Length: 97
Image 1 (spheres, rainbow, N blue to C red):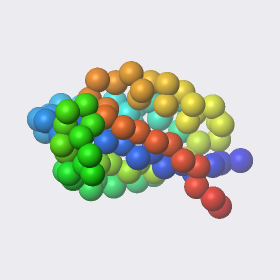
Image 2 (tube, rainbow, N blue to C red):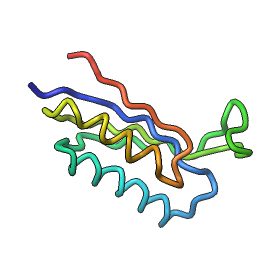
Image 3 (spheres, one colour):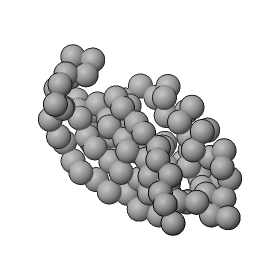
Image 4 (spheres, one colour):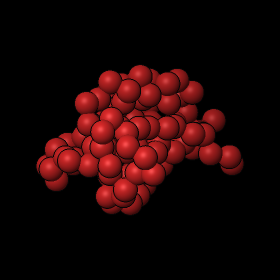
């Protein structure tokens, strides 16, 4: 059965456009590598944090909706996103049907 997930992703606010696009593409490649398919990428742009995170005041927000039949896909995705340099915060949630 196919499940729908959403990845909330915050990237470093000091990234250049090409580095940001490269990081976003890398995340999408992880999703497809682990058996998922990207449905939608919602770019919220640069937003100010409510509090400093790692001495940074702002970051780029993305919400990536994806589907996967493999229940291990979100776990594998989190394991790889966790160690990516430009990622400040991330969260994968399963959406209700």
